[in-house]
Length: 473
Image 1 (cartoon, rainbow, N blue to C red):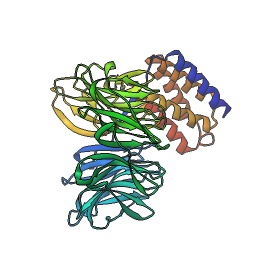
Image 2 (tube, rainbow, N blue to C red):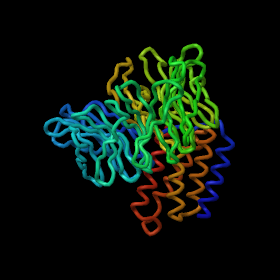
Image 3 (cartoon, one colour):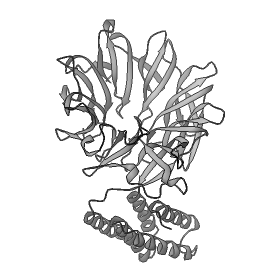
Image 4 (cartoon, rainbow, N blue to C red):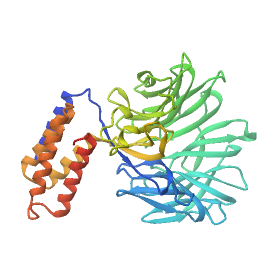
């Protein structure tokens, strides 16, 4: 542990000396289930992903990407399924069709996909969000219009409405609190709700008739959007306790919140005074215009992690109307396409574009879930819509250092990785590659008595992955 601490302190010093350098990324194409397309919907801290993919026979199936492979979660006898969310235990929820093509909410855990059935009077259901206890929030329909539900302790409970026809659930926290929106009597209005302590609670509005809640954090703070008193404007809000705080706009008459973290920081989009749509970050009482740091008129922030990094997408930076994924970190916004080294092996590498969608996500380790399109030199799409995970190369170094330190190997091996990272932080490719090459050569010479064969393979694979990501020859 002492060695590891010293190396991490050294790496921190190197990083501080090069603070202008933001993380660059290694991109991993998750592939498909045999068809053309795959779409990632959620990523956990271990880098596991769920979503859905085309199969070779034209169906759409939910998947779990884990351990380097895409696992087909199957269906309940019907043609299709979709994965919507994943928790830290690798449990997945979504919807899968039965033999009569009705969609049922599922819980996938430990290799088994369980059909959770329906609420009374229902026929169809979808799991939208899952917490760390395996509780699920989602939507169901049947003899009634769409209703939000909570699956808890083996029971699916209809959360009802405020007297109107329908309700929708969007998020759940680890306390089992659910947020969304529900119609009032005669469907005269929609109201943001939180389901808490067994009751559906109306969160109110910012003076208008309509509101909706999009996310909730572990302390029960809620983000969403509400109509204001003049009825022509909608503003993002942060609800804390019994207070709905108007987050304002970037000068226009609209803003909406999409996600928040455990620090109460909120992201979304807002109109500006000149009519553009810009991504924003609300932090420490201020709405920061992230879109102003990008060279486009349209951007949306879709997710924020617990260290304040934001991701989203910006449109449209070329004639093909591509929606490029972006990341905000340490005060700067980057188009990720400009900061990926060694993306894919040639000849595909120069013709891959990382695009952002509403499901672009970021975990607390800074890994980004996005979408990639592959083009030929004529800019014709040759592979469309593949889910990809972007991993900061600095994280790859951190993981490699942990493995070397944990193996209690010769100090020179730790030094080689540390020196390689210092060159990388200073954007010195020759030194980066040279030190990694020397590290690999030294590890290859180690005998089984010094290093177990499995760990040896793991260290070599990690170092080679960094070399490929950086673009070493």
